[in-house]
Amino acid sequence: MTAATRIRIAETDTPFLIGAAIGSGSTGLAAARGGADFLLAINAGRLRSMGAPSIACMLPIFDATSLTEAFARDELLPQCDIPVLLGVDVWGGALDPARRASEIAAAGFAGAVNFPSCMHYPRPMQQLLSRTGRGIEREVAQLRAVQDAGLTSMFYCATRTQARLAADAGIDMVCLNLGWNVGGAVGHRRRASIEEVATAVREIGRLIKRINPRIRFLLEGGPIATAEDLGQLLRLAPIDGYVGGSTFERMPLEASVADQIDRFRHAGRRVETLNDESAGLLAWGRRFGLTGRAKAQLAYLERLRPLSSVSAPVLIHIGQGQDPMPTLRALASRTAGTPVLFQIDLAGEDFPARARAMMFGHADPAARRRPALGDPEIDLLIIHAPERLPNGAQRRLARALSDGVFRATGQRRPNSVAPRVALVRDGAHADSRDSDALDGLDPALSTLFAGTVLRPPPLAARIDDLMGLIEGLSEDRLGRPLHREAFSAEAMQALEAHPWPGNEAELQTILGKLRHPGSGQPIQRAELAPLLHGNADRPATGRSEKDRIVDALWRHGFSRGKTAEALGISRKTLYNKIRKYGLAD
Image (tube, rainbow, N blue to C red; front, side):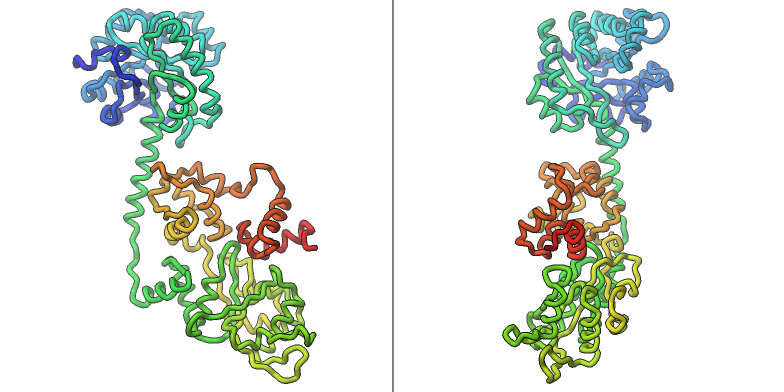
């Protein structure tokens, strides 16, 4: 052991001590490079390195002494030039504290720490161990012997009584253990907030300093999972240092290795080289907002582009949360200049009688205006929810589209059908058939549209485009695009595995509720979990769905189209909910 490691840690002038409880030489070297003041060689660290949770250190699966000393002697002492404290327990047979202290010094350790400790056991178990001479009192005695040998000692405690015992003995450092660390793949769930534990920290810290002001008071574990958590606690309670176990070893390793592998996996994905035809197809689609290069998207563009150059009527079958407008703009693109789109929405503000009058003209001469079907200034007539038209109106529309002419209401002279007609229906799924899009339509109308059904691919069928969509939508929502580096590997895997029943609208909603990662910390899976599992729109006030719909209708001037967009649902879904809750009147 070098002279540097012989320095008593508690007597240094370092204002805030950082200890790292680790289980391998590589982690020890990394901790030293990061500026740790000392290392703890404990069996929990070794078990973490083996993939087990920290709590496994209290199970009878390995001898703590031999397990700890072996890796500390072979991996830490030969390589690390900062002090190493050895974890010792008092549960063996005959124990001579002075002899054990001499052995620790001879091996080259800077001192010792009571670990594993009976403080992790329930109180009845602690009392039983104390009666047999293997309790907290014996742990304090062993650490006092270590100090008497000129080394440093650190005492883990969990209660006020245990802290007083160590302070009375003059132990160099007292570390209040707040429980097993939360977070990570095998971490515990958070049981107490930073504010809640700060009260106990202040109380125990004041007790220790009253007994012996020279003792360094440190913390470890519990709700402190990040540096930000520690900073928050320091604003509430004064401490002299922090010891990191899972926070320095398990959780960073889980994140960094996973993220690194994910980056390499992503970099290794073969990006298929597009031929000239496919590249031209993608460029054409981008003009209308049809982005992405997934196979399903390319197949859709291959079907859409030929239909954009003809005047045949088309039926578009969209899923919940899909926007039909890019497809509609593409269908109207055969017109030079900016095309005129006229929309009739039977799932929104337009009722069947009004829709029929808008298409075929009004019977009242005073209200008569040019019917949309015969208006040459309209390039694309769009009818949303055509299944809500009465069968008679559907048959009339089918005849007009089939013959190319129609008689306006109240007129005998035939009119030519001027605009192209597109029907838009909600409710498509990735595995639905064309016949599903035609259900509910009059046979005359369904026969006419049977060969021209378009179904934009759902987001679940084009996951390869997910990251590109996130970058584009986040720029609109957050003012800056979120690139892949903004998400941890687990978060990205969760996004890619999600079925996306709400398609792009669901993605927009989730992005709008995410924090903007300005701190440089990637978005974690835990942050996405409640959003991906349907809690994104659950109000904190506990308001009912009916209340939220009424509120949204008021805020958007009872415009059902705008209300549906704000709620992240389709117009058809909103229409059904309005009927369900009796809000139609």
